[in-house]
Image (cartoon, rainbow, N blue to C red; front, top):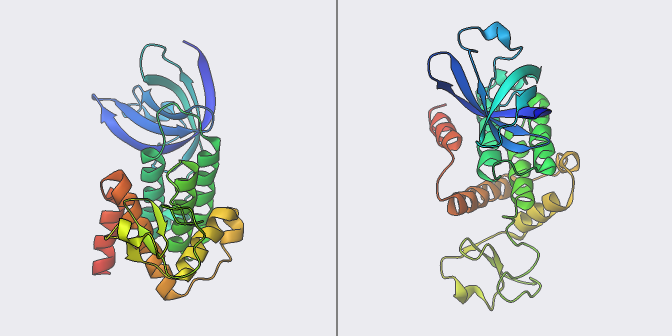
Amino acid sequence: MPILKTEAIVLGKRDFRETSLLVNFFTRDFGKISGLLKGIRKEPQKFASTLEIFSLNDIVFYQSRNSSLHLVSQCDVKNNFSAARQSIFKVGSASTAMELADALTQPEDKNEEIFDLTLTCLQELETTNNPDKIMTIFKIKVLALSGFKPNFDCCVSCGSKILGQCKFSLNLGGLLCDKCQKKDITARSIFRGTTASILHIQRNDFKNNLNLGMNPEIKKELGSILDAFLNFHLERQLKSEKVMDKLEAVL
C-alpha cells in the first residue's frame, strides 16, 4: 500500500469498535476519503490531533487498493479554528459548510478549488461578525464549483437576456423571463437586487465579496432562495441548518 501525505479537513467522525475512529476527511490532494485511526480512543497521545469536526490537519495514510477505507498512521492538527468555536452560530455555519462539502463532492475525486473555498470559509469565520454573509458567499460559490450552479445570467428556458419581470424556478434551476414563466407555475418572484447580488458573488473572489452590501429584504430573500435550491437538489434539509433553525427560534 502506498504511503501518502496531504492536508485534510475533518468532515465528520464516528466510533469504530472499542478503541478506534472512522473519520471522513476532505483532502487537498485526494478529495474526500474515509480513514481508520486505530487505537486513538484508547491511546489519544498516538495522534497529535483530537480530530474535531472542521479542523485542518496534516495526515499520513496508507492508501488501500481494495477498499475505500484507508489506514491513517499520523494526524497532526494545523488549525483547530478555535476562535470560531467560541460562537454557537459560527460552529453551526462551519458545520453547514462541512455538510455541503460532503454532499456536493464525490469520494476520492480531487477538487482543490472546493477545498480552498472551504478552507477560506473557515478562516473568515474566525474573524467575522457576520457568519450569515460568509455562508451566503460559500453556498453560492460551492454550488458553482460543484456543477449545481443555478442560472441567473439569462432565461433558463429560452436563453434570452432578462430585461423585465422574471421569476426563479427551482424545477428548472434558474430564472424565467416573462414569456417563459408559464413553463413552471411554481416559479417564485425574485428581486432584481437579489439576482444582482448572486451574479456579483459568482463573478468575484471570496474576499472581494465580503464588501458587498445587502439590504435586509434582499438578504432574507437570498437566504430563502439558496436554502430552497439546496433542499430541492439534495432532497433534504441539512442537519446543521435544522439545529440552527431551532436555536434561532429559541434565542
